[in-house]
Length: 416
Image (cartoon, rainbow, N blue to C red; front, side):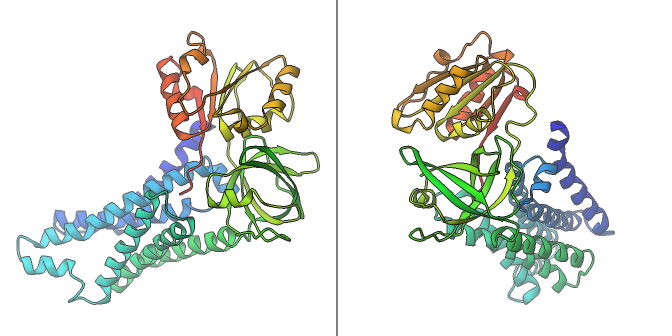
């Protein structure tokens, strides 16, 4: 099943791109001109797939292998599309270069051809601005969001460019789909129409700069399993001024009456502001997403958590004893950063199949060789969650100890 989910997005890209190129393939043109046109259609196809992959729908995420995987492919398809679309006019100009340098320049220049060419270049500039924002992680979220929104406008302008050139088929159906995907994302996700109403029930400090927030449903509750994450937007309370922005948070527990808890660590402006949230604050929740701890095979487990990465494991342990021998390695910087450590020790004492090893690492990278049994690692199914540098180091270490990639599962959030 996991193998099938891993193939869905590549098959979608291949089918969409091949179909569009076959439909619009030019005949009786030079090789260079044919290549330039084919690259343009391939870029359009990848942009359309990229728009589909930005939708935050639980059923779509389940079909395509998870929201985080969709975002990774969304970035790849968008970047590749930009490169192909940039090559498109350059190759067309190169085709005209041997016969007339003036004609080659006129192929590229918008000054003599008006809006048909201007719209194409404006589309490329917007795509370039949006893609540049994708790789600049330190810019404020609102600025990043508006620059990224320019990608959608760039896609529409690119399709308008084709219609102004007199190409209506298959451009008009693609334009209709692009508008549908953008409107879907804007209305259902960004405006929160697909989200469900919740209210903050309690707020508890569990470590330095970490609070656990309970959310009570005000309507039909969402079905959530341990290890999943949700997108939550907080609004205004009596004293708390919410920002209404949706951010991902891993669920730390789900009670029998459908009250959920999330743990929020102050990692940026928004999450630091959330530390002061108060009971009674209204929220909207979209999800749940993720398959991190789903479909675990009946074999010994190795769980490694770094800092706030303990949350998905805690959520699973709170549901009851584990089903197979499990070793949990919990790494944190200092004792004041060790969220839920006392609870984890209590759970480990009550569960004979769970062994807990907790360690304060300070500011140094942990010595993995001294922490893990190097001789028996190949028998474990390994689950990793924590800072990207820690996860990358662990994956390399486990691979060097004969643990196959199929045995290594890791959680990370990269939604920019």
